[in-house]
Length: 494
Ligand code: NAD
Image 1 (cartoon, protein in one colour):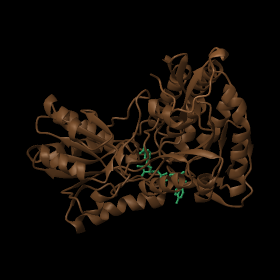
Image 2 (spheres, protein in one colour):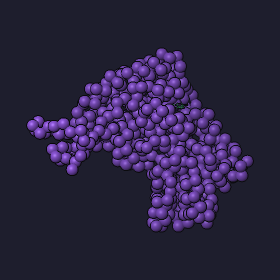
Image 3 (cartoon, helix red, strand yellow):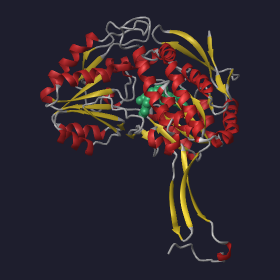
Image 4 (cartoon, protein in one colour):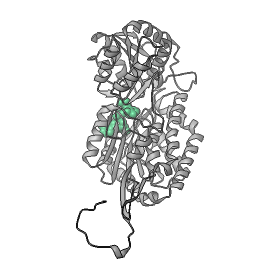
């Protein structure tokens, strides 16, 4: 059985805690590996390696750091097919989707290649007589990233690219469900010239997460995962004096107005609801259809579902893979089982004729969904599209704004005025206008509102640079020593 261990100070380190987890191939349902779960002392070793590497790394000049980021970019690009295969074998997503994830992750490495420019500070000459003031951005120190199963390549890249380019050293705790990509990336980073200790990987469960949250030498924690854990990470990390950004779960609505192009809206709803088997934090899970077009829209979505090819990634014709685990597949199926009892109607039941042998579920639609039903109130994180029928734009936006989550949202309309009003009013962090999955490009930042994000910084882009640095302001004077005197008054500029 393949064993997946840790990466500490530039090499693979076998776990010694005796605790392990099982890694499956979700397309076959068979176990493919055993992953070591770190003990507190193993986390300590990774943090110690990161701490030891910090002084030299943060002193490394910006040109060299940029050069290394370019090297990482080229190595990830050159190895993308291998990464996609590895990713798919543990996550289940089809290869084209895995390659898309890697490409979106790469954008963040490319952004970090501009680190000399991104770290520029400000300078004010002659703020007072003979006094200049300037601000600089400095790294935080040892920082940690804790990532979810659904983007095992992209989400680590969201974090480590900016973190290390800014001069921090990094400890990554990937999801225990698909940990291999993190170790492969560690090896590529080493080939790219990242010094030993600057990037470390600790595999594990709550024990290792808690060890990072409680470690005095960890300055900041960047987290992506479900809302209950995000809230826990934020509360525990900040209580321990750390800077924390913790991105949580989602319930993304797509509001379709009567003037929308219904074929375009149906294509978008199907792509965004069922891509990656709905296991994307930006997946559309609620179709808000204004009454007059609801029947026509549902019909168009229904017509498209039989054409979706569901199956293992080994057949490149397949477009949608399995869910991550048997337990998760069963949980998603339970929303379909419970829908009728709550007064909703399962219009397309993905439990029927799903491929066997792995953790598969076919695309599903539940119609007549309302707030208060379990399938509406909870994040399903599977290929289930809930349809909520609303009377008007106003009812639609009121529903979206009342939702506890605020990650992504989309409006489909031909009316620019309404789209603009929507952008002004909606309490969601990432908005698509006729775009169903509005994941920001790497030079903007990614983050939801409400229970989809705890903390003040969004992820990656300019906010990522701010998250991984702290600013310092220097007030400087090089006076003629002959003019120096004692003055107990408060420093004034006039
Ligand atoms: P998860 O919260 O179960 O796990 C995320 C990480 O936290 C993993 O590394 C895991 O090992 C760790 N963890 C799990 N339980 C823990 C505990 N009790 N204490 C400490 N650490 C713990 O999430 P997941 O199932 O891996 O990922 C899916 C979730 O992530 C969904 O809710 C999805 O919406 C969310 N997500 C959000 C974003 C975003 O940007 N907002 C992006 C991707 C995924």
